[in-house]
Image 1 (cartoon, helix red, strand yellow):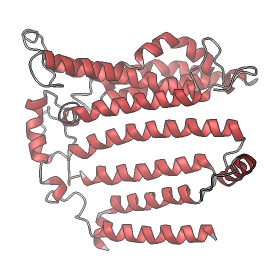
Image 2: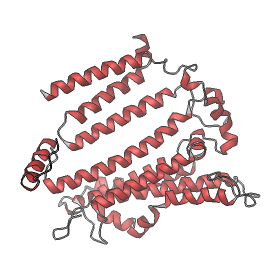
Image 3: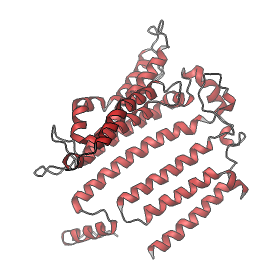
Image 4: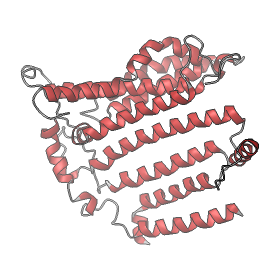
Length: 249
Length: 131
């Protein structure tokens, strides 16, 4: 009964939504309201105003810099909430199902993972460092790096993963994203401009990609490394099992 | 109706939204509810990103002689990046709460969880009447 009522409700909602979609401007119309108001301003002005060739990176880090800083804080708060609920693993005691399983992952899985992992890490670095001149950026590169580490942890177990990326490194880098964002923003303040202007007058004279590019790269790198470590810590908190006599989280 | 065929991305977004809502409302398993929530989020991302599309558009990246007039709208893409990060964070928090629930009650079925909670609070809670 409950199912029938829900289905009727969802069906009605679906018809209503489809009717709305049918009355919206045609997708891809260059004259539609979404494509006419402020977009030209962003597309034409972004390169000079933000110093990045990728307009999306410019929008994320410059025009919407405060928003992205809040977003970075959101992931960090997410990690804090997960750790508050589940608790941090104790030193050297981490294990999970793949570690205890009597069946080891086959040689094919293990050698494929060890063969692919360097390339995954390299690709994530490329994605972070090329974020301002090609598709990519800090969040994307961090997600790729985290995915590579997840694959490693799935094939070799949490214990090996915890040894490969030592806990002190994770604890130290987790906060990197908000910290670099704030420091770079404060550098603009010190330089006599507004917060998050990516400027530091007097230091920028002889640098060959401009100082602004270096600062953008710094923020991207902070977001990438911090994001990847946050995801790995979330995985560690979620996948580990309580040991028999341990207190509940 | 023609317009709906032109706007097939939007139509797909509406259908995805309904699928996600279905699994949030009907499925008793909490993890499937969270998956449904993620499907709903994805449908919104699809809708907003497709709104920025222009006919024959190119990626909004200068350099290599790309002309600004042909580029697609960069704003929805930047917004969706924010949205994805927030979705990941909320999913992580929700899943950790689910892990805690499973450790406590040994089930992920919402109906059984509600029953467990009722039977647990019935003897103890004397004066908390809340529908």
